[in-house]
Length: 235
Image (cartoon, rainbow, N blue to C red; front, side):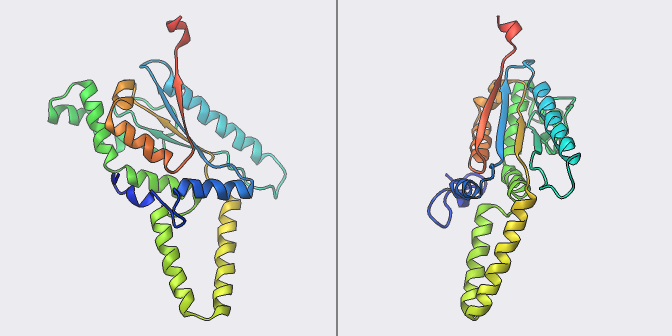
């Protein structure tokens, strides 16, 4: 299914999804792939509080690494946070991507004559039309590369150029490219992508936009769903 430019990511050059190719590459190198955590739960269950604590925990880990000996390999324990709740007034964690910067929740209510839940769903639908750009940003930040489709196109063009040149130049160029790739892997990128969802759980889990966003993230990263429950109130 072609949804907002995601069709070209369905299969890589080897005929398998790009995420499987990346998983094999990371497994061979012994590194851990960046993991996406989508936090869902009922309104007031503590999703945003959990996001804040997760980010603080990751930040504390980075500070401890800074105190280690000089010359150590840089840590990849970094969290990239996304806020997908257009109706929230306060985001206590540092959201690198915030839906409120793209969609004005109150303006959506006014223009379309919608209530709170309808405006949340409409805001998500509008944001989803640009979510391919979000995936591109996340892939560049996590893997240090262009999205799968662009990377494969550039690789094919590079191979055509190499065929026209001499074999010696081909070998030299190949070594240079491989060296640059290994350097990017050593520097690392993200270890976690943390996603905070709207307070009204049904606006995300029962909507087409929620499905598209979840599947788009799962096509690029190993993705888990964290369901937050307020146990004292549920007891």
